[in-house]
Length: 330
Ligand code: NAI
Ligand code: MG
Image 1: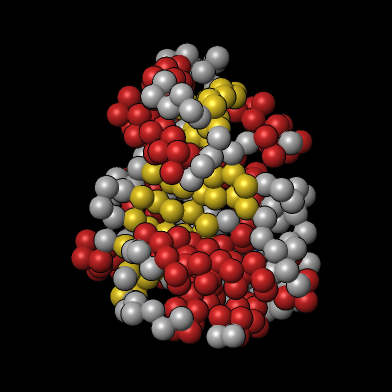
Image 2 (image 1 turned 90 degrees about the vertical axis):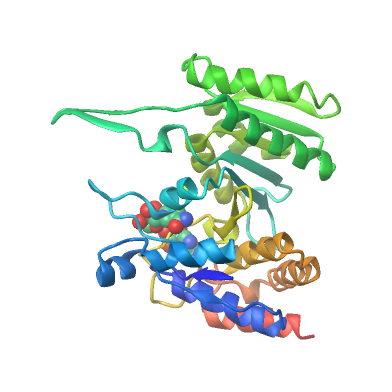
C-alpha cells in the first residue's frame, strides 16, 4: 500500500493512521514515498519517479496533504495525480460524528465531484502580462461517468435524492452540457428524486438548510468549494475524508490541505485522514476494520474531553490517537 505522508501536518496525521493500522493488526505493509515540498527540495521534482512507481505497483494509496507553491510552473500535486491516473470520481461524505460542535447536527450528504476537467484541467494561456485565460473543459464522457456514479451510489445506499449542481444559466455551453448529460443519466433512475440547483443558490441552501440534501453531483471547481463549505457545517476541515477513484486505482486523502498555520505543533485533528483510511479499507474489502475505525471515532468524539484544538478541546494529535487506539483495543 502506497503511503505519501505529504507536507505540513501530513506527517503528524499519517503517523496516526500507521498506529491505528498496527493496532487493528491489518496485514497492510506501507510502501512510504515522498512527494511534495520535501521531495522538491531533495530531487527538484514535486512527484519523483519512485512515487509513480509505487502507485503503478500498488494501485491503492493513502495520501497526506501536499503544499502547492503558488506561482508559475508549479502544478498542484493533487491535480497532477488525478490527471495522470484518471482518478475521475471524487467522493466526499459529510457527516456529523459523535457530539462534535457542528453548525448543523443532522447532516448526511455525499458529494460526488468530477475530478479531471472543468477549470482545473490546466488549460491556461497568458495572453499578455495583463490578461490570462483559463479554459473550462466539460465533456459528455466525464460528465456521464460522474453523474452515473452518483446515481449508482444513491441506489446502492438507499438514498432518495440527487442534486445536480451547475451554473448552466450563465455558462450555457459548458455547464449547459453538464446539465443536459446529467438529465439524460437521471432519466434512467426514476426511483431517485432529481433536483437541479444553481451553485450560488446551493451555497446559501447548504448554510441555511443542509438537511434537504442527500447526494450531490457537480463539476470540479464547484465541488471543491462546496465540500469545504460543507466541512464548515459539520465542525471543520479536520473531519472530512475524500476518495479519488479511477478505473483500477484509488487514492484516499483528507479534504484539507497541509495547514501550515498549525504544522509541527502536534495539534492537527487526524479524524479526516483516519476516515479516509476507513474508506480505503472498504475499497480493499476490509469492511470489518473500516467499521471498527468509524465506530471508535464516533465513540471517542462523543466526549468533549477527547476533542482536539480545532473542535474546542486541548488534546494533541498523539493523545487523540491514543484514545482511538484504546477504544479499538477494548
Ligand atoms: P488547509 O486545509 O491546509 O487549512 C485551512 C484551515 O483549516 C487552517 O486554519 C488549518 O489549520 C485548518 N485545518 C486543516 N486541516 C486541519 C486538521 N486536520 N486539524 C485541524 N485544523 C485543520 O488550507 P490552506 O491553508 O488553504 O492550504 C494550505 C496548503 O495546502 C496549500 O499549499 C494548498 O495548496 C494545500 N492543499 C492541499 C490539499 C491536498 O493535498 N489534498 C487540499 C487543499 C489544500
Ligand atoms: Mg479543496
